[in-house]
Amino acid sequence: MLGKGRREQRREEREVFGRRGTATRYRMRQKLVAFGDDFWIENESGQRVFKVDGKMLRIRDTLFFEDTQGQTLCKIQEKLVRIKDTMTIEGPNDERLATVRKALITPLRDRWVVKIGDGPDLNVQGNILDHQYTIGESGNKVAEVSKKWFRLADTYGVQIEPSQNDIVILAVTVAIDMMAHG
Image 1 (cartoon, helix red, strand yellow):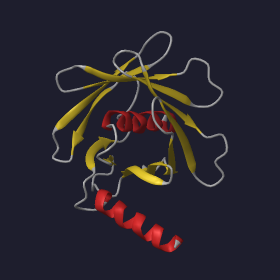
Image 2 (cartoon, helix red, strand yellow):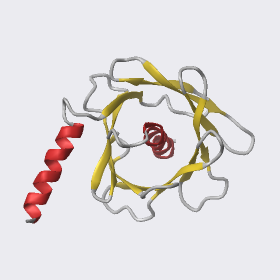
Image 3 (cartoon, one colour):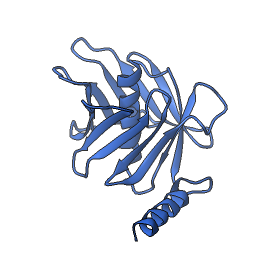
Image 4 (cartoon, helix red, strand yellow):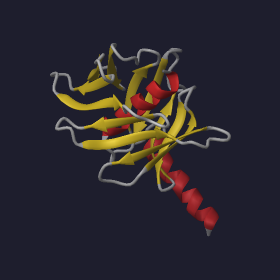
């Protein structure tokens, strides 16, 4: 029974994240993510869809996600007082969308926890430094980050399940990138 359930889960993941799957795909550039820098997130067709605007503030650093018209969709901020790496993601009206934290105990691989404001927590596992990891909820994959889809060495992709909030997942990816490569 357990084998059949896992086999069914893998089949469903292929339908979403496979080559012709239903996942929404984005392209990001490695090492361009830095406070004070601006960069674009592109869709799988190479069109610019979101701008990440880095601002250097006196108290804490902030990144703003904007649409192509310049409307702020969310912002990522470092926590002022933190015991472990933590960043918050807030909506345009300063509502908390998510909090990203690095797990204290990570024996074999990087592990992060994302507290979603009004939803279930997400777990992030894999090789964060090499941009090869998954974002999951209760054992189900909701997003995948990978460099294997691109030939360019400094590019990685983010695939997001259609039922997820793309902005939140992309902001989580950028926050993790900032904390892991900062």
